[in-house]
Length: 324
Length: 290
Image (tube, rainbow over all chains, first blue to last red):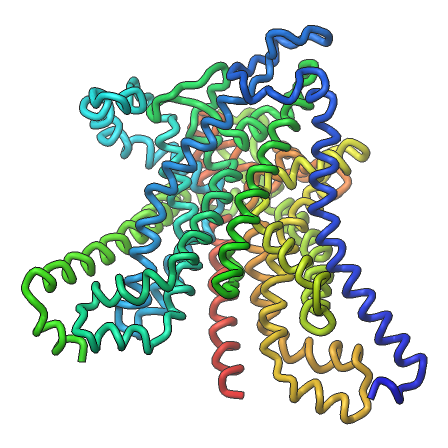
């Protein structure tokens, strides 16, 4: 049909195609542009202090001067530690719960409840970050005291891992940040895992039942193996989200930047939180530049995790949804 | 059928089955408790100060004083998110049209993949990006905030619209071609209108997400607590920024304003989300009937 069309009509079609391609290309440019511009802002600090600021764990902008390079006042190791510890702890809490919820919704609960339960768990993702942070300060921190006391009194005496649970606990802590993060990534992981579980072929489930399996045995034989890569992919997406979550974490983590506090009961900062906290007040030499160094590393980390997640998920078939 | 089979299973296996179901129910509970806890807590705190003053006045110059409201934040949220919507919607929908109607092969796959990746880029990093290419030249402004939020919305709009456009049956397109309608007209007047409800759902979810964002706005719109700014070329505040700023002041009165702000923001976001979902559900049924 196109071959017989008048030339101007073909031109119009091609023009329209070009226009839509242009909008798609814009999306690609945004990503490339983000990396380029952020790195460009970070460059002077990277050149001045070197690439290894993640080996230093002291962030003391007031000690920075225009010329001195040693000791590096912009160490970011403690932020990477904070980001990794809070995110890992959040995953530890959220992933098993997400799998449980997804199994319950897709395999256990009555068909009629499925949609409304899914909608309810999805609502968790709709609550704004700043609200979680605010709620975290006033409702969650007091509620965490018993947990912290247990860590302090019991777990901190366990050999090898005891240092991880040392007191004192003042409320604002990695632990509080991790719990808030867990709540925030729960709905994201759940919605992906749920979709994967819902697509398990009925034949496989019935085959398991035909062998005399109980429901739990059927889940272990048919559902979980089928959903394994989906679970991995979803967890990675949750991890990337936890890496980058900013405001809620900033509000409950305590924002201590001078050193690493290794205990999860201690106060610290994450890469995202230090940017939010200091960005508009960065007035020391290389201060803002160094925050862009943090942003560069954060971008790199989330890119790597996201790309890995998408590759895993795409291999197990496309899963979509506006929540992702 | 299942229950008959279970009854033939040994006792230990039945116990394990029940324990597993119980654990799943507990995890559901562990999800619903924070949801209800957050909503109830914010509602209880927020309702205390909700009133006409809150919606029509700006905060007092001294944050420790009572009275005043977040009118400037509400204006800022509506304006900044509105402009972001205008920026993101055409680009997002255009991308979706390209992916569904024209895109084949490597370029389309790359765009699709990168839009998935872009969803996962932290919003604070997007804020830093907009700062480095816009704010360094033109200063903090509501418009810079809109650019940041548009980037947050863009991949959400693109991916959700793409999914909906894929559901439009090819018969519709072919019927239009058969009438001699050119391709671009077919897309604009046949494909897009029939997918409109679904696209709107994605747009609303994107707006809800953008309205709740705080981190990128800190780096772009900056905030402006004291007076109402309507000009998007100046620094502006939003509801989310005002909640953040007032929540961490340590003044009780400021915090009680922030709680009411949080309630307002949650209400705004939840209404949008629920509307979008019910629209999606209805649209889903309609498409299935076809």
